Image 1 (cartoon, one colour):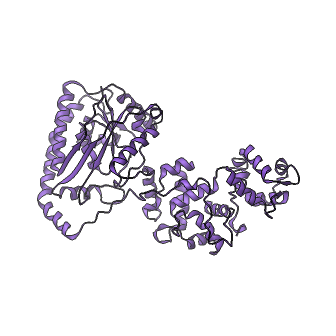
Image 2 (cartoon, rainbow, N blue to C red):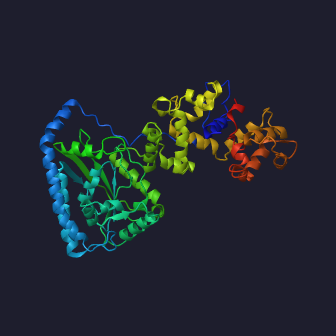
Length: 523
């Protein structure tokens, strides 16, 4: 039986889920209340609307500006290459020692000038606010929101600090040489020890006392539409050293820079931006953030504090989306669902529900089998009933309501994942124990007989000849089980909630009040 059918059967045991209470919404299962929808549903989409008049203007300006700017960019890159070559000559691809002496002084000065000249030739007008911290004051810059490949402006303005980059980027002709000139921290996708090596390299550089250049990190790890700050990766905060937040703003009437998973391509954005008379960008260096002792030991805590400070300065919310949400978006598109259907705020889901990416990805397959035929990639009551092969009834509507968290009459993938996890893997709280007791107490007389106990467990586990008399006698002090006896046993024996029978225990299915037995036995 699918997990959807199991969870639906589970929901049938929740109080107020029965016939006769159709107008009442069932109470939230414990832990559900903390899963509020994100303030920004999809930070990975950008839909720039360009009117007819604007299109004509872009075309006319492009005739003049585009060839000039392309030639200037090519010229500047050619001028920069010799300085990058001098900086990296006789140096390994992955630097083991910082570039020092005259090479560092001459090449860094030249490359900073040429970098500013290149962005100016692209049409960028850059305004800088705040004071840039020295390497001793803040070994790390953290820049956000990360929304475009043009965010490299921050690197030029900050004085060409080192950056964290993929190893493949260093192999690109011309551009790779420029990248190596800033002594990057290179990450390999094929090396299983790459993450550990990268963290060790960041720690070595940030604690070198200013010998190495500062490091610039985009902690979000992927591009968004600047409507919020998504989860900050902890890598830049693991060393426990002071960091300087760097804010990036693009205050333009027409957005031609945002590069997200849904929107314009790299080539299209370059063409649109180069055809603008100018493009404004603001780079603000905020006060240095110094971690306290607790934050030094907990990089996630430090990352969240810095993110909140930056979000407040930008006037935007924070969400728990991350790069894994982007991967789920791609998977949703491959399953013929709208790409945004895959967004679940993976950081929050994985932390609170103990789910990994592979587990969520498998649930996406089942969700797609239900929702692919519906409009908008969401499950309505009709799809819900069709998949479970049941008629639409009052009870089914109540069960559907347990998944439909925002009461909009449909279930999106985020609601689906939360519903399955919370209903089939509940906490062993007193409220759940009360629900479980009511489940076993079929005749509602306040006591559980051995027959009632046996009937429910046999049905929930799908084993009609299961002998549970030994377990019953262990709980009961007489011929029946009172609520106090039931509660006492549940709290003293949490092992019955996990790994007692096969991959799930008796009380994962029954005692916790979340019995995953066939739905048709309940309706």
